[in-house]
Length: 119
Image (cartoon, one colour):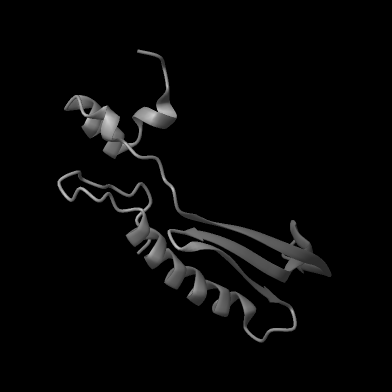
């Protein structure tokens, strides 16, 4: 067997492989991607004798694209939107619930594990 840690670290695949059911493995079909653009704000603040912050990052815009069973759509928030990060997170987690549903295997007997449980 080849050395493929990115595949063998997947608990679902490991379980199917151990039970000789690897042919039932379905890779993630539906997902969310995002792009966050930032601007640098010069602050030049000193903290004590040996620490200094020269700049902080300000979120300029956030764009996400979601691939679901019923299609692909995008959403976008920029600096003109009040509380843009909070609004983006709210929508992102709502979309994540649908992504999770769409990625479920039709065969309920096949266990599904999430490497990073967020929802």
